[in-house]
Image (cartoon, rainbow, N blue to C red; front, side, top):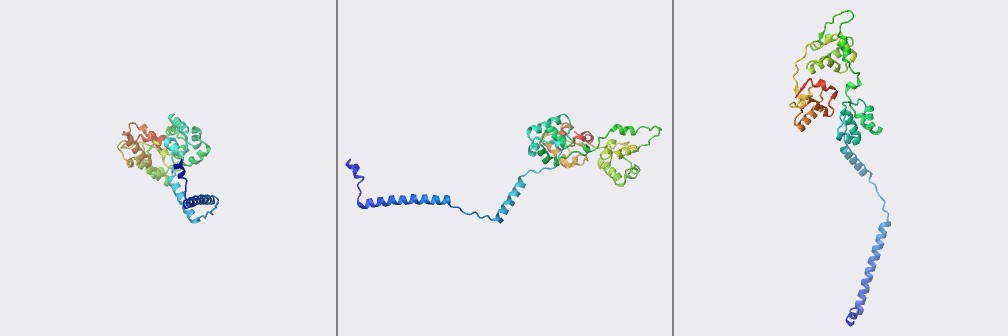
Length: 292
């Protein structure tokens, strides 16, 4: 007990030192409390540097443009899962389109696309300006029977002396009502790019040639001498060689080569239908110029 009491016995100097130590600690605590309260309640005005803020906003806009996905014109009949996702379509909407395409049918307008996929009006309004449908969807369907009937002998038993579409000149084509200098030159240019017409129906594919004018031409002209076409091997041709075929655009030709490289080879020409933006409506015509 005596030892314990000895620990609490201090002389006058020690008691003074302990007192000042306690006072010092109390002052520090009070000072911290006051300073903390002052920091919370003090309001500092926010000065905005307008010029610096403009620079920040411009950098944000540049970053947003770099991060945004650029959309180019495309045929909505060949939307892949990934492309549909980037356009904002749900998996259910994409599946509806793919199921519709499995029936070997095509959508030919933005309205038909919405009916098939059930996408919202707001999404259709955003993506429909990028829809690129083949030119033939905006024209009346060509009926071969009407042309073939024009080739028959008339009721007056007048015999038609046919002229060859592949050897005729631009001047000879101008005898047809509606065919002028520019249109006749366009027909000859199209024939040269093809290497010669293989079938009469190819005349209807000449740019800006009215269907009725084409029918009048086919009353006097037809394919008599078929050209000797060297078919392009789809498994060995380069993208440039494929793009030389008038029916295949450069971008589609590159996709064909990429598809071939990924899959080793193309075993059937029907596989081309899997390629995005491939002109499926002209697959039969394109087959005339390709080989495996």
